[in-house]
Image (tube, rainbow, N blue to C red):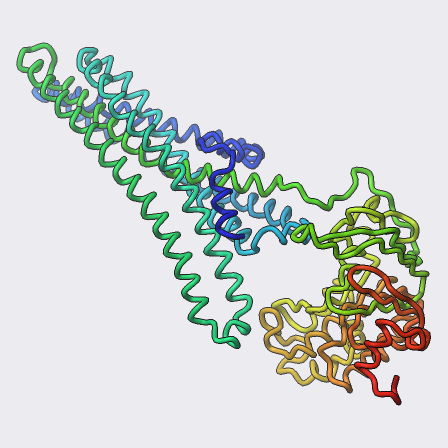
Length: 594
């Protein structure tokens, strides 16, 4: 996502209040017991803390009292300390456990949501930004639930309870303390608004930085091949420095706010102490009451200082919650119907495109398909050919319903794809994409991805059919060899053969091949082509190809140009007809072969 989009996202109409944390309520609701237990422990520790100054006052006022009284008071203080320790430990356990559980649930919900979104969503947002939401934003929420919220609530109880005991101890001195409250609150409100904006901006820059790094590392071979390391490092350094500058501004603002608040609070305490000392000298209050008042005043001041410090953390977490909730509620352009129709079994594989018009969401002004009418009968092998950008691969994208057309409709066995659950009809298809995907696991598990319940023997049979068995067998651990991230341990042709084996293993009635043999050498291509011919028997096959030699034997060849079907027929008929296909054939075949 470009920085301009990030700037817009930071300024978009949204809740910039701590109230945005209410978005976490659905994730907290299942754990009411933990929440209630944590609140009980928190209340206990706050109550015990508020009782401590009373004990101190009694010790001070009875220091010269009867024998044994001091021992009783000190014994009581020890009991209070034990209760405080127990309550604090219990609060930490319950709150931390609650935070970890809720954040784990958020990450699961977010991944479940994002992994089900159509590719159109990822046309608008960098994968790195989504990962930033999964990591950085959820870490902020963990900090808040596991620490900041409970600390804030405890300090709120100490603030309210402390103010009550201050008034009980000395209404006069309490009145002076309350006069200081507006002086402290005003800077928090004024500077807090600026801090919210800076916090949101900082998180947006972190997301941009993550997206930039993910993009560069994902294309590290291309970056190095074009000697763009220095340029890529400079671009990442620029984004990182802007992220740091944003963080520095946020930290500076928060530090200034903390300085102002703490100075005002403690300056006020000094003034109140001066008045209290004069009252003790005049006999208007006892030394123990003054000590009690001072302790409560320190508690109240500490609570206000802690709340002002935590306020910034709560605002950052509110921004993170807001972004996560937005992502969880993102409207997908491709959705399953409320009441999906079931696809009749067994699937015949009849495919129909009826006056389909489509433009990718990222390029709405450039139609990828226009007025496409195409009908494929069950068991037919249809090859889609034409220049790059003619719309061939788009046909497969729409057939998998990664996108929906802007006009027209697609049917499988007479049922509109939009009337069915995507998982239902996709189970009947096997796709070999132009850029084969290899997962960071073993060769066996990569092939088994096509059908997770397949046996080892079935996996090996699929590998043999895809001409992949021989190279897999000589790997260090055979089928159990780890292939590395994106299959970096094997060649491009080997990756493609594993992808083909995966599709063979799926044993689906509809087979979609997008340049499936483009990275193979001549010998492997011939072996795979023979396997494909066997696999195509009894199946509907759509083959996208630039190399016409691989599709000469197709039942029908459909020629695309600029998003339209311009011709269709057998290889010989199209060559005889002339036109685009004949020109492509002359470029790729000698006269004797053509």
